[in-house]
Image 1 (cartoon, rainbow, N blue to C red):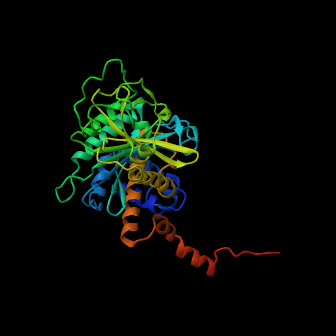
Image 2: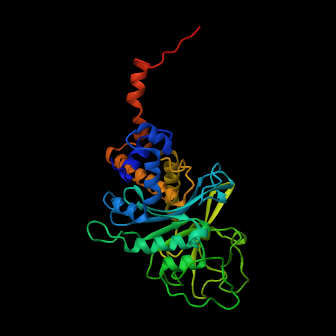
Image 3: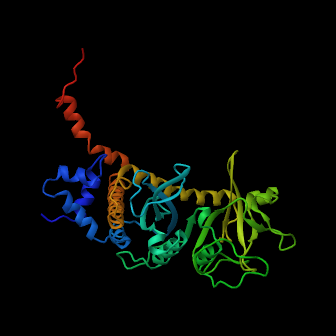
Length: 371
């Protein structure tokens, strides 16, 4: 019997805990371990396959948000895995061995529903690309994505973490020709190409962005009357706290301004959010937009807890890539069913064991005995 991605995805979808090839072979005697391993080693599943499935179920509405962030798939106990590299994990708050997954999540602004539409694996030793390169590629692809109706995927705003808030990335999102930066400004840390975020009177031809800046990022709110200062050192009056202020970021083109908002999240945490949306003049509204970004954290939690995406311990790069591709297809299936049935993705996954538990409590395979 032929083994394909459908059978492997069904295994990842159905298995409650164990997602190893050995476990699959033990429960599907028609396929040997070697046969499953050979399929995953020889097949080449790409991110294009994910979009081919998502486009059939996505509800795009009239507009939406694109979210970008990365997470580390934990491989601490697999030192021989080819794609494994030591990198910072925000979840573990430490540097761990793992595979970096950079994802693009689309959020329908009307319903709040979200789908992963694209992804890249951080493997610079193999492809020489940075995470910033991957995000730029995914934005380019998103601008060309076609829905079954023939219309392009509608999105107007890009949300991302401070790691991606580079000069080149902002200019690229704004889709603005990148002139030379002003004299003496220097180049900010970055690694991508052109197009940006609003100059003096408005943005370019691309999308709006909202992203937090690192607290030590150099900015100027004085109109070049004072030297650049760390964004955390700026003074704010009552009106500016409410409406934000216009600033220039160090190293950006001299005519390029963005709006800065001081967002107080708690007594211990303040974010400095910039946007090229010159129509946005309320800090509270900017904070609401930024809150959408946490949908991608929900997605990260779900793929790790429900799809077995971290559980493959095979060493070969291609097997890891194919396993991750199938895990994301499984998440898409679970999410679509959750939206259709108005249940949580966790409830659906746990329901697979419900009949088993009912049966075991009525007629246990091994009865408990007490002295």
